[in-house]
Length: 351
Length: 164
Image (cartoon, rainbow over the protein chains, first blue to last red):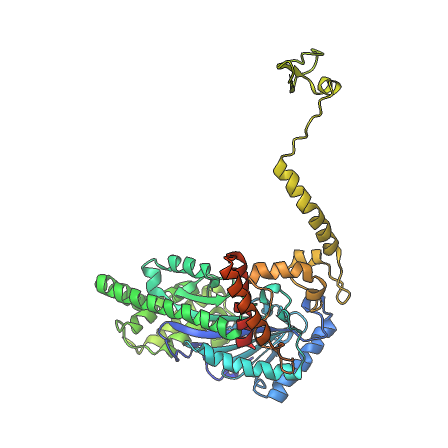
C-alpha cells in the first residue's frame, strides 16, 4: 500500500478547515449495520464472512465507485500498512487483526469509510474537518440508504438496527467530535468538565477511542446512548455540549493570557524551540510539544504555521506513517531520531 | 450459662412463662422438649425478598437456558461474551433484553431512521389525543404519578413522530 493512494497526505480529518477548527479537529459519525439473513460475527462461518466481504466489496468498488482506490482486505496488508490505517482513523485497533473476511474501504479524501466484518458486518463512518456534524450526517445518511437498498439490513421496528452488542442497537450511531483543549488542561478545569459531561450521558475518550490516553490534549466527546432518540436529537445534544466546551476553552485561553501572559508565552516558545531543534523525540513528547505549538499559533503568540503543516507533522510522525515516509522498518529508538529529523525539516522555514 | 434443665449443654434460649412471669434459660434440645418452637434466624425482610425473588429467579433460570434456534447461542453465553450471535437473538431473549436495553439506553424503543422500504410506524395521532385527555384527567384528580407516566408516553410518541 502506498501513502500516495490517499488524496491528501493528512486526510480529511486533519485538513484543519471548517467551523471552529482552532478547537475542533474533526466531526465523525459512525453507523453499525448488519446484513439480514446472516449470523453476527461470533457465530458466522469463515465462508459466510468472506461472502459478505466479497459482495459488499464489489458494491463499494463497482456500483458505488467512490471506493475503487482504497479497498483492502486485512489479510493482504502488512502489519505496518494496517497500522497506517489505524493512525488515519480509518480502522479500529481491533480491526487491524487480520481475521478472515475483514476488509476496509475509504473514499480518496477519506471522508467516508467502511469497515467490513469488524464487530458488526458493516461499520460505516463519515468524517469532516472542524465542527460539521450535519454535513457528516447528510453524507452518511445518503450512503447508508444506498447500502440498505442493495443489502437488506437486520432491522426491527421495535429495536431498530440490530447489532452484535446491545450498546449499539437502535440507531447504531456514534457521533464523536475531536477537540483540542490545551488551555482547559493548563487551568486544570478539564477533569471538572469531564465529570459534568459524563453526567449527561456522553463519553470522553482519548485520541484513538475507547481506553486510549488523551495525548496532545486531544479528546473525543461522543454519545453512548443509541436507542430511543432520533439521529437528529443525538446530533443536536452532542453539538450543544460541544459548543459549550468550545466557549469554555476560549475563555480559558483568554484567561491564561490575561493572568499569566509571560509564563504562557515562555512556555509556548520553549515548546516551539524544542520541537524545532530536538535530535531525539518520542511520539508522546512530540504530541505534547505540538499541542503547545498549535495553541501558540492559534493565539498569535508563535509564528503563523498553517494547520495543515501541523497536522502533517502530527500524522506523518506516528510510528507506522514514519516508517512509510522513510520507506524502511525502524526500531522505536530509530523512530525517535527520524521523527526529530522530519520535524526539523518541516519547521525549518518558521522562526 | 448452662441449661437450667439438663445442666449439661449451653443455654441459648430464654423461655418466659407468661402466667408466672418467671424466666428460665434452656439449651435448644430442652427448649424443644418444652414445646418451644424455635424461629429460624431469617429476618422478615429476607423472608419477603425470598418470596418475591423465588418465582422470578425460576423464570430467569428458565430463560437463561433458552437457546436461539437460528444461531444456537444461549443467554448465558451472551452474558459471558457480551455479543449476540444473530439478529434473531433480540426476539428470542426479548424478556431479558428489554430490561438490559432500558438499563443501557434508558429506553426500549427505536425512534430513529428506518432502512429503505420499511413501512412507516402506524399513525399515532389518535392515541396522542387520547393520552392528552388522560393527562388532564389525571392532573385534575391529583394523580401525579400517573400524570408523569402519561407525560412520558406523550413525549416518546412525539419523539417517534419527529424521528419518523
